[in-house]
Image (cartoon, rainbow, N blue to C red; front, top):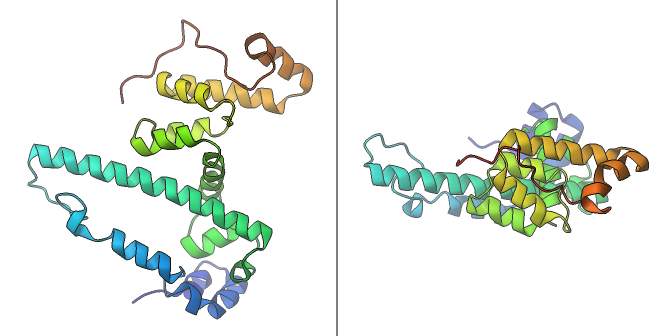
Length: 226
């Protein structure tokens, strides 16, 4: 039996929002989503073109089929994660800007994500942040979709990359091992958050005042093959 948006909100302790959601059940449907989105979701669950096993587990797959299926599933996971981030960011903007009366019952995007999707604060904040960053980072987004960058690396570089520095950060994300990449990101963030004098001292020798990461040093580890 399906769960209405109202019932899901109530279960998550969102009673005030649940009262508002009850009034918009006709709009959002029984799963708390708009009918057009629900239809798209049903279409995506069609197993006739979802690879050799669809969404079921088959322990007797041949090696070639198994490899093809895992590749298909990983690609599907990447596309889904990217869309989740993008859509959560869009919904967060609608709530903050109060552009949709159906979302007025929610205090903020964190409240709405908990009520609609059961997502915690940390997951929501990260995905909203990444979704907003990807709007300005088409090359990093494409590398993620194509499988050249895993989600963990996308999560790191979107903390610091801008439209002007995207290519440099993408190169580092593809070349450095994860720990070295995390150090680079942490250094760049420290530079952003520090006072003007410290930022000048850390950034100017390499970047002439821009937000580009410094070039690779010989001792830094190169990313191993994933």
